[in-house]
Length: 74
Image (cartoon, rainbow, N blue to C red):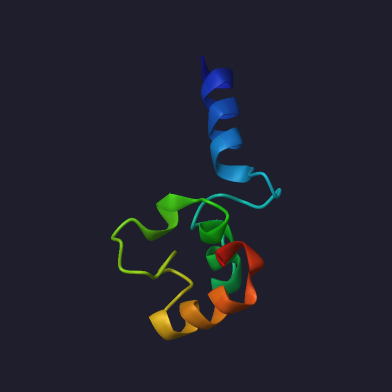
């Protein structure tokens, strides 16, 4: 049972289509958080304020600037 839980946790937290981590705790920078969010990780902005992973992204202005740089957000 522990192996099954560990495997599921690993799949959910550590992988995505692009091979990036899929959790705000794993995001080291706001750019990484915005990229995950743009690639479909909806859990990045749970309060729906337009700022993903508020542990690394502090302002909507910064997020908007990063979104312009990331093709997946267009």
